[in-house]
Amino acid sequence: MLNLSVILEDSARRYPAKAAFTFMDTTLSFAQVNDAANRVANGLKSIGIEVGDKVALSCPNLPYFPIIYFGILKAGAVVVPLNCLLKKDEIEYHLQDSDAKAYFCFTGPTDFPLGEIGYAAFNAVKGCEHFFMIMHKPGMPSNIEGTRTLSDLMEGQSPLFEMYQSSAEDTCVIIYTSGTTGRPKGAELTHSNLLWNAVLICDLMAGDADDVGLIVLPLFHIFGMTVMMNAGIYKGRSSVLLARFDAEMVFDMMQKHKVTLFAGVPTMYWALLNYTNPKFDYESIAQTLKICCSGGASLPVKVLHDFEKRFNVPIIEGYGMSEGSPVVTFNQLNTVRKRGSIGKEFWGVEVKLVDTDSTEVPVGEKGELLYRGHNVMKGYYKKPDETAKALQNGWMHSGDIATKDEDGFYFIVDRTKDMIIRGGLKIYPREVEELMIKHEAVSLVAIIGIPHEEMGEDVKAFVVLKDGHSVSEADLINWTKEQIASYKYPRHIEFVTALPMSATGKILKRELRK
Image (cartoon, rainbow, N blue to C red; front, top):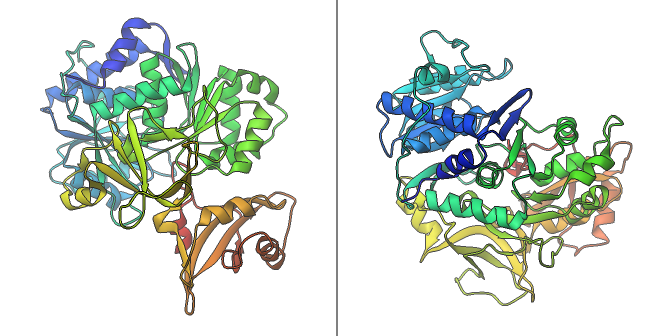
């Protein structure tokens, strides 16, 4: 028997008065978070939510998120976290596809009324029976007449609840993939999947209960949920929440709360590296930081090197995906790290690289990364054909191309879908991006393939220049051409002020292709 919410109950027993989550001027102890989650669980049972029912949650990085998340799990239900940037039709799809019985939705800021959008989507889904608005402050009435709030659900409920004893292989969370190849699919992750990941991440990061983690990765995304929230609760460490990434706010929180642990995606490290403000004591921040980790996409080696040099802190880079709960491989602090590598297999996880015939490739050769182990999802919810395609003989097919060196370290080359084929020759965008970011005028770059009548595809670069620097399209093309095989260099360059990014900070190449 296993229910992931045991990590919260255990830390509430061991560290009842210790700060669990801090957001702005609000700090909740582990005991307070646990008591509030129990009230949510009692409230859900009172409205008829049963074991196995799906409950959707749209909430940014606020203390409400872990309270509702663990309240759902304590009741034996399944959490369906939704991206807070989804629009009405997208939310409607997720509620319908997941068979959500209830929906908690944050009211949102004035410029993006998430609550109103969510309520409109809820009303379009007949099977979703209950809607609860999450207001900015407890006790505030809903801004939509006739709708109940989270406070309404919790009012009068007992802070005591006997956690439902789930099976380790019961579905715990249904997390939706980004949907870059069609409509999003719901990956069913078990209590066992998520607990193993949280426990092992704590071991990898070599931290202790005195650490302070800064959570800016969205909690509705598997990276932030597992690596920062669940691992932090399991370890009993304090976490500082930021509702969205902002370089100034990150440094402000690091300095104010003496943050020791930080996790981010590559674009966050790039933004922090390029931000300076005399009001911050960067030397003090660097002395406090003990470890950073990166995932979600490949971290350019130059960004990694420059960040580590500036802040004198190791960035351990890993690799994962929603279907892997998420961690598959990771560099480790107690062994040799290789810059640019995603490290070696996570404990209990097997990895292999195969060609198009599913034959394992030799060391140094490119192949699709496959993995199996305790981290692999049950499957895609209600999608047996998609599940059978992704999971073959127990091996999860990632769609990522990688190589393995003689020391057993893996290196991501690129996504299969991002690979460009120009005149029959394969081009991996990351290789070109890693080169171009070394140019003295280039701050950030994204490479995509564009249609070409003769060659099939051609190479195009979207480039963000550093402040105060300039370079012409012709000069940058020639500079790149001199240092890379002639078929790989970009024939087209578009200078932009910013690149489109997801809520988690990933560069959205599908938007660039449009």
